[in-house]
Length: 453
Ligand code: TYD
Ligand code: MG
Image (cartoon, rainbow, N blue to C red; front, top):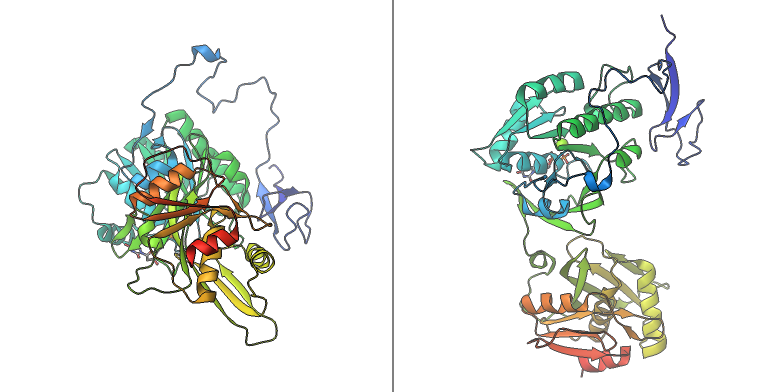
C-alpha cells in the first residue's frame, strides 16, 4: 500500500508549505495552515500520453483557427449579460463570489430559470424542496431547468452525461468533493481538484459552467486565490445586506471589459434588474434641504447620478469629528484643507459628516465638486437647487479639474432631466446643442459664487 502523502496548505491564500507554520509566510495570516492528504502522484514520463485525456490537441497556425460567431448564450438577464460582455461564452467558467446571504443562489437560480436552453442546477447547499420553495417565489413556470442535489463530482458528471445540459450551475464549489483525492470538501486541495475537473469538462464539452464561491472575512473568494486564476470570469456580488440594492461587478473577464456593472434590487419575489440606477441613488425630497448635492459619476462605462449628503455642525468636543461613508476619508480631509486655505471657509472647528447615499463606495474623483458643494451648502444652510448636478475633481490649489468622459456624463444628466451641469472649464466638451445649461468654473471661489449668488 502506498504511503499517504500529506502537505500543508494555507487556507487563505492556497500556498503550499513543507511543514506546519503558525503564520503563512506568503499572506501573513495566522493559523491558516492546515495539513491535507494528497494523492501520491504516479511517476510519469512527460512523453506518455495520459490515458484519461481523450481529446488530442494539435498546434495550429493562428490564421487557421476559425472564429465561432455563435459562441454566447444569452441568459435573458440583461444586467448579467452586460456584465459578462454580451452573454455567457460557451465553454467558459464563471465564478460568482459574494458574502453569505447576499443573494448568489437567488441570482443564479433566477438566471437558470430564465435561460431558454436546458440548465442543470446542482446544489450542495440546499435540498430540492428548499430550491423549489425559492423557485416558487421567483415565479417562472415554463423553464427548462433541472435541479440536482449532489456534492460528488463523479455523480454530477454521471448525471450531466445523461441530461446533456447546455449550461451547468454549481452552488457552491466549496461543497464539492471528488473521489480522486482524500481531503475533506472545502479544503484547498478539493477545491483545486474539483474546479480543475469542472474546467476540463467545460472546455471539452463547450458547456458554460457557473460556479458559486463563498468569500472569507477579507472579501476574497474563500480558500484559494488560485481559483480566480483558473476560471475565465470572476464576478463579485456585493451590497449592503441592510440595503436592498446589489451590485454585480466583474473582477476579471477573459471575454469582455471588467468595467461593466449590474445593479439589482432584492425584492420578496427575487432580484429585479435596475435599468435606471440613478433612480435608487437619489433620495426623494419635496422640500429644499441644505447639505445635499448630486454628482455625476462613472461606474465602469455607465454614468450614475449619486447623491452626496454632508452635515457640517459646530464641534461639541475639542477635536472636531470627520467621518465618511462611501467616500475616502483622507480625500475629505484634503478637500476641507483646500476649502480652508484657498477659499477662506473656517471649517476647522466644525464636525463634518459625509455620506454617499445608496450604500455604495465611490472612488471616481469627479465627485469632489459635489462633495464641496454639499459641505458648503450645509455650512451656509442654503439648499442647492435639486436639478443641478456636478462633475469635477478638486485640486490642491483649489482649481477645478477636468474629468474623463465628460460628454457621456452631460448626456446622461440631460436624459435624466437635470437642468444645470457644473463642471470644470478645462474640460474638452465636444458634443454640442445641449438643452442642459453648462456652468464652467475654474476655481473653488467661482463655483461658490455661482452656487450661492
Ligand atoms: P441567497 O441567494 O440564499 O444568498 P447566498 O446564496 O448568497 O448565501 O439569498 C438569501 C437572502 O435573500 C435571504 O436572506 C432572503 C433574501 N431573498 C429575498 O429577499 N427575496 C427572494 O425572493 C429570495 C429568494 C431571497
Ligand atoms: Mg447560497
